[in-house]
Image (cartoon, rainbow, N blue to C red; front, side, top):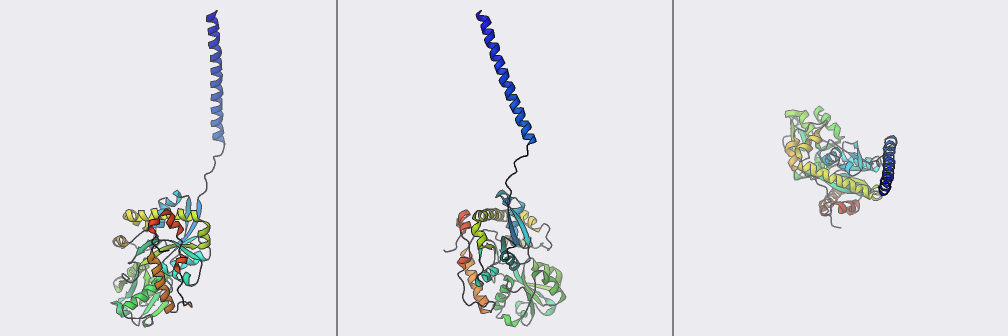
Length: 347
């Protein structure tokens, strides 16, 4: 009798166990079926940021690297590039609301301050002394810098090229009145000097190299080393920057990674930058070691802006007579949050 009860007890437990196993298997099957049939939950869309910039210019390497190597995407943003041939044009795109951010040299920032435009620099991303200069025609008697006196010089007015020309002439004991300046867009320089419309052109890379290539043995170059240090910056409207502090930090973190890539992987970074470019960049390999790809906010930026404002006022390029406080045109919070050691601006 005890054995019969024991067998009955085991049988009942086996039935219960089988029933539980069946239910569990059924639930797993239904779950798998539902997962296969149900649409997957979409991932959060990447935040879009439009940057007005000149991708032909080597100073944009950190932007190119951040986009192509996935540093922007890692931060949850997708960057759309709006192409311009000068920082002046990129600044205008930002002012007109056509772009969220723009890359500019210090001169457009200086003029924005004089004109009291509500923009701010969020970081300097590139520095060099070897990307500005003057290209001259030998057949017009230009063999040395002093020969620029009395010549027609192409330049994009109110840009870093304009400032470089003024500083360069000053080094030769000349003034802007000793030359005839003719205003061109940067992309028009090569044709203008090749046709002989001008005797020389003051500009920046890659336009300098393009003009030299077009002129061949008839071209001569004077570079602005020790005359002008290019400070390449990222700017935005204050209203956008103040309303999107987290986005600004994401952009800065990605650009910092991009800058490190451009510094640490020069061959790969150069190949990435040169890919698909219209201009001849064969001379960049030798110059790359002189480029400083670094994200920061340096006191030197404020000093440069003040010097340039004095130049603009003296040469009557503005109707303003007082130098603004350029600290008001720098956004410190972003850099101080992501890389405080790179902020040396006194404030």
